[in-house]
Length: 249
Image (cartoon, rainbow, N blue to C red; front, side, top):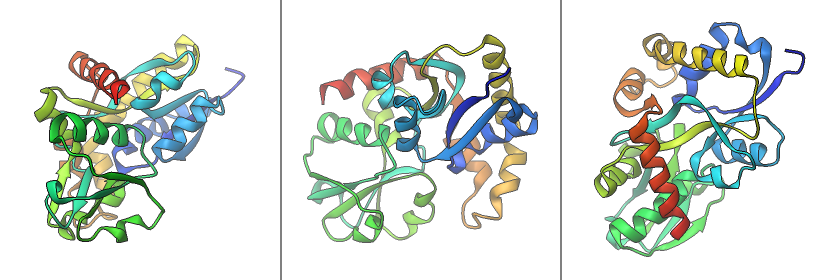
């Protein structure tokens, strides 16, 4: 392959099994990789700065020629642990919620749940980078990814958005999928999926690699209990239901 495929991937802990599989098999020689937070992955793919991204599913309708090219995703069937609202008061007493600037799907999911599940209408505020420190009294915040680790010990009220979606819809949730903005070589797609599958099959090794960086967080439990990597038919159905409901908000 003469031209390297340009990829933007999420740098969070939950994507490490994917990255492990890609680099373990020397597949990285066929692509150039940038590690970004989810909303930046989306921006790059929409603007055609990259060919493939692990992007928030909420942006799929915005991507020209969007194609989901993998059987793997960042999903959950119940609680996900790292996409939550944190607060000092119960949700019904919250007047405003800061929105995580790194997120697209989670922000849309929050809007769907507020309107259709919790039936609440707090003020939603775009967040500055230090917004976690603004959580107090009747101000809450939506936080995603690795920055959530340990926050459940700081705040008495934690609302897991994936758990709420499961209670509301009865379906699993897909936060991010591997999406291209055009056709990719069939050989690349085949090998790419094989590498992802290999990485996901080795979550014990991956957890051992990153456990020392998260001493009060069980990385293997997170991978095996809270993250569900296969993009199966139930997740696909849940994803399209979410996209349909998000369009109505």
